[in-house]
Length: 202
Image (cartoon, rainbow, N blue to C red; front, top):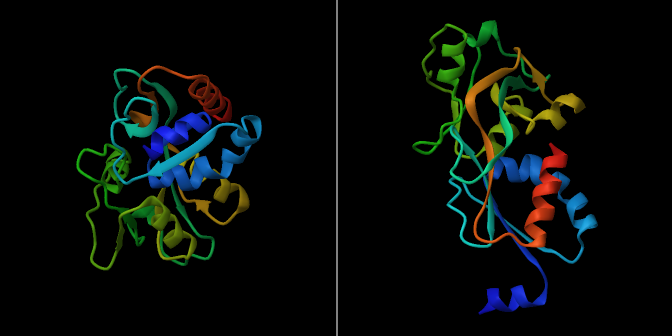
């Protein structure tokens, strides 16, 4: 009943996404959308595993393949990053202390094992390395100089421009994966406006 009452008050935009995209990309830009559409009530729900959108919801989630109804917001582009204060030994990644994102089953995004395989190398996990379960925590650890993270572009571009993180190797593109936008149910004017804004931001 509370949801129905809220829908009656003003256009409601419900967006589902993961912690990394919400915190590092969407929220820093969201003021621009809200300034353009001040009457739209915006609700952002972040989760480690983004569920299927229900009617009236928009999901922005990572997938290795195109969903049945959706469009690609940003392809997967990854670069190893570390704080400029990090004093580790990179050596192509073989000597570095790595930060590992604990991915749920079937997440599909690039892992350190995938990154090393693309370089023609193999490197297993080592004792003493840090394992974290959200991307925001991974970036906080990298910013604190605690190791090297896989940086997803454009989620880390603000840090790279500011110099708070530096790239340690060239960018690597994933094999067809990326963030996709899915809108469930009939699209309202708020849905269309948000989709247009997302495309312009990218």
